[in-house]
Length: 200
Image 1 (tube, rainbow, N blue to C red):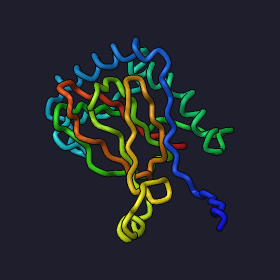
Image 2 (tube, rainbow, N blue to C red):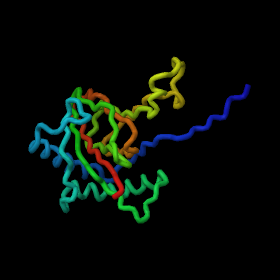
Image 3 (cartoon, rainbow, N blue to C red):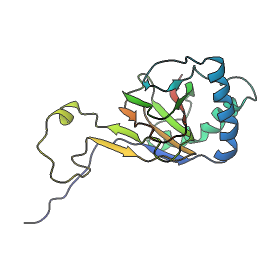
Image 4 (cartoon, rainbow, N blue to C red):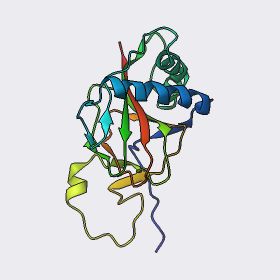
């Protein structure tokens, strides 16, 4: 019997970029994030379990590191829209919110989505070895809860996928995509900037 022709429809994208000049940016971004932590040590509790979640960045502060970073992100956001086949002409595409998370040893983030955002992102300011993978889960709840025993893992039966991350990586993905962060098993901080993208 011939092998079947397999057609894959409705893929869910995670776009990975290496941020240009990330080493220089990260020195200043890290300084800014730790200063925010000193000012607001309690942070916020959202998807983070044990980590520190910052308030939203003031990205409109002219000539600040966060403002320069947001401006530099625009080309990656535009390229992502183009890659996904979305219209950009005469569209006001904006970063609606940006924040940071510091995960120390044993900290992690539970499964969540970013409602009302066309795109969301994770940018790695600091990503030591074993700091926790970026995980995405299958959107189809029925497929996650009811399936035969798996003999061999492949992309047709996968329920969860984990991506290893490195400093300077920028992951951009649809805001509806369920994602979580594995436990930081290193002795160093995992520092991530996340943001949402909308059309005004």
